Figure 1 (cartoon, rainbow, N blue to C red):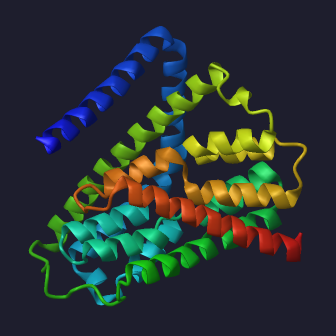
Figure 2 (figure 1 turned 180 degrees about the horizontal axis):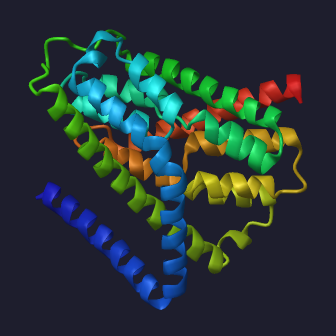
Length: 306
């Protein structure tokens, strides 16, 4: 009975939020259309070309069994670093659903395999938004350094032994061509989910901005953090526009925001982790600690460099 009431409560909450979003789209159709166009444009021009090749390759390597020859953290971390959010979550989710890693191992991997890509941090944020390649390099080092510290912290906390992925659990039962075809279909499905989250959170942030919700915060830095709480690209852009902040402060804030990822990235990651028993609460807490570790590393680097 308690479980039924709990599930009913979740359904009512989800239904209420969805109904509210539908009502807002009807009341503000111009904003809804603008947000959708902006989100789809971002997906087509940046997300799709950046992630599709990596998604196909990662899926294919998993299906033909190459991944099983590596230690469990090497492949998801490397692919997460190369391609960015939410590649790490997708690979960890696939490994857990196939029975190759345990739930605790999936949690450990998610503590350091959920990262942004270097091109976004060094190029888009550093050189593009902040106007400095050095600042971008500081953010990159802080982000990955924070991820490794976060992984070490949760490895000790969860007391999970690091090892190789099980070679006996799953065998490749499809041909090379079938494996490649399935990899392509799986990749487009995952990218479709990412597109939906991008559009939804673009709409949410645009509505909040129109309603003046962010203007309640008088401090520019706090306003940028509030925007980054929902979407990291918007948050980093807001940090770059803070004229009263030093370069050091901008690096720290951008490191914190990119390591948090925003609710949009967290939603994408949870979709990739469906069926793994990795809870939303755990992911939120681990991303929060990752952001704090990254901000701390950025602080120490900025003292030495900037």
